[in-house]
Length: 192
Image 1: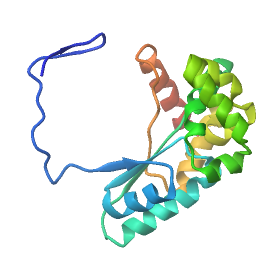
Image 2: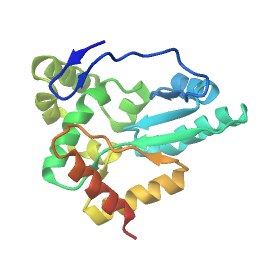
Image 3: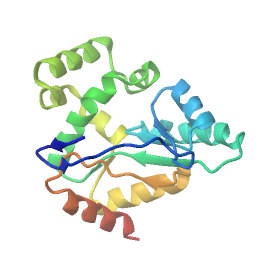
Image 4: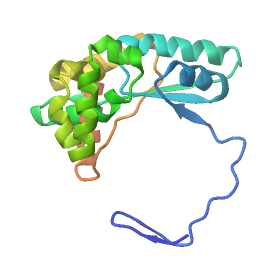
């Protein structure tokens, strides 16, 4: 396959048949995907999970994986929000995730049917930038890590250790500024 894209290009790229040694990592938010992930996968990515539910999700995955007696990797991914600009980005990022969340999660945060419908309409009309304004500010800290760089780094370290998460995966929304974001996050997490 050949491809000339805006960001990268490929010449004569191909994909051979998979090998049994390739890990299968699943992702999802509902109870059936969690159970399936623990039973059949080699790992699971928990992305933008409500922080109050993270421990139960990890426990469900570990329990299902334990019965198969194998190594199981759990990764967690969410934004570290340390500025007003990142707060606005987090609201935009959450807009499509919240309306697609399991009913129990929407009930937990108090999202009404009308709010879900309004956010869906805004997404259809103008995308995440328009829908962001409909994401309640109090929802942001329930799904992301909000605070000063020191506070956010400490909360992330604590969350990963307390919940038994193996890896953190930083969501990078744009290639521009990605290196600086990665370096900043590494410094935040490395602080003691």
